[in-house]
Image (cartoon, rainbow, N blue to C red; front, side, top):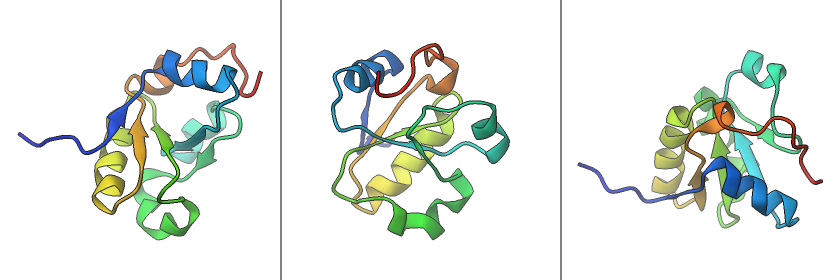
Length: 106
C-alpha cells in the first residue's frame, strides 16, 4: 500500500476558498470534450496524457488543485507531479460533485 504524498480537498472546500478569493490555482486534467462541456472558469486545462510535456506550465511551489471528472485521473496526476516535487492537491469527487451553478471568482 502506497502512502499519498499530496493533500486532498473536497469540492465544497475548494469552492469555499474561491468564494473567499484565496489565490486558488486549478488544473483540469480531463479530455478536451469534457473540458468543453463545462469547467471551473479560470482553470488551466492540461489533459492527463499531456502533463509530462507541459510541466513548464505548472508552478512547482504554488499550491495547485488538480481536478477531473471524479477524482481518479487527478489522483494519478497528483501522484506523478508530487513525485517530481510539485505542490499539488487532489479534488476527489471531481466535476461530478462540483456545484455547477457557482461561478469562479464570485
